[in-house]
Length: 307
Image 1: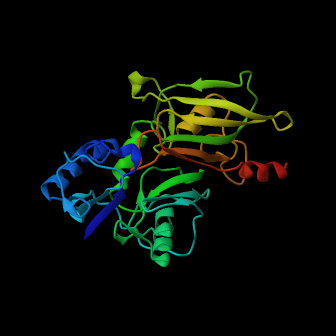
Image 2: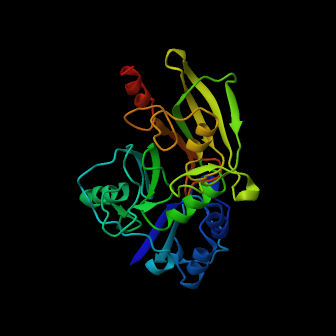
Image 3: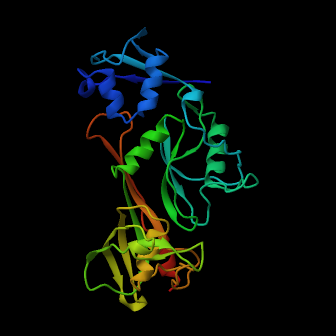
């Protein structure tokens, strides 16, 4: 199976070599090596080396073999549910994951996950990506009980690019949560280390570094106070990516997320935590280009109507 990425060189990228662009786009080093070895780089229909300097309007074509990429999936198509699509281009989708939906299967018998549903939708619509039928590729996760914005790759080339953008903290992810209690400060930081709960493998807990905890940092800002409900709406930003980080930091500070059964939150029909804002540098774009998506707080407003 052959994958081809075709790009038209814009003014900002003109004057740079193919190597410059591949590096700026975070195409992994081993894939750049594969392109050189297989003569997989063409400009205006002619093979060139990575040293070739590009001009505005050039058509750059990159050709990869399926064997060049790390394997993921495939995830069997399941059309029993549909995930709302917030954004889509040739390389990836941003979807709004419902609360209670698993991201991916943990066994071969599971087919009721977000990636199964996205796979079915892509197949039904006959979507193509890099010259092949698009598939669903995971780039990052949300807890099963958390709703909100998730990036799903449509081809194996974009996955390591998005993963590196996330690893280098160039992707901004913000969450909104309704939590118990009020705050004396409108903003602050939770930075207690987090480790595996020795009593329950499903859970994480605040734990000193010397006992096996890992550094963790969450910043918060109060969006709204609900004193009559003894609760607050927060905007939360992850600066590290520990499992259950937001839930653990808030519970350990006596502000457990409403609906969090695992960490002692006040009762609700769901966990009131949503990945609300996502900012992503444009894959295959030029320096400084970004896309941003956001959701409203309807998930909180629905809960408040019941009070």
